[in-house]
Length: 289
Image (cartoon, rainbow, N blue to C red; front, side, top):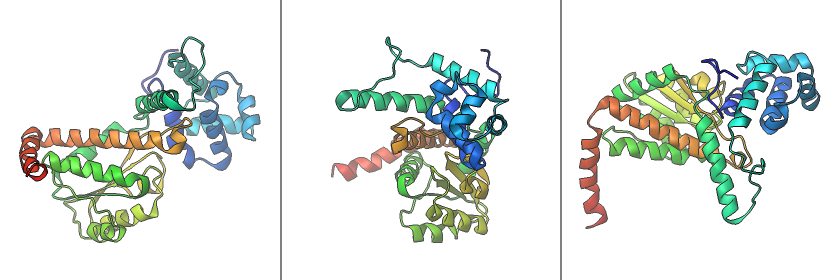
């Protein structure tokens, strides 16, 4: 099929569905869940087949597809067929089934590669550019993230510092909230939450908003609470396969995206290579006294 400019990139259809699904009505959300769980079957089903497996009506299936950003059910089917045709399924036509040892590692890596390839489908490019500009010009950047997103928040703050953009990432929830509450309109709070629903992360977000700071939210769900409370919402795909369900893809996608965001900011600011070299000179004596 020929793709329109609004179609998700090849391999990204499930990521696009996953990003929007939580905001749908329950019956429509069941349709999305069936599509994500059984894409190779949905690609060949009729709308009535999907309705039967989702426990809803054909009209709801069509409405769900439209609310997910597709023109209708046939449009979704064509995109799923496109993605299936582009997938590397091997000579037997079967996906890897190894469950242990090096076979398991290959299966996980294959899924991570697929999820990374489609992770930017939900991203608003204009929002990304506005986020880069805000981070590049802010006087102060505070990064908050908790739970599984905590390491990602800490990692991007370190990368900012190494490349000459001061940033801080408090790990204590109380300190996060107190720090965010002392920001000003010249500052940015970068909040990271895969679900966009972590109340521990939302509290400093609210404190930063009350203080007048610009809030940038990074999440995998387009209509999450974090996006609602952010001035700039950056939505990226998460995992859709069996290992994605264990949090593998979401973590890798999150870190890869934050690194990309950091690189974009440092390029706008300029001088990141020189700053990194200066930081390296400071670090060497610390690790080799």
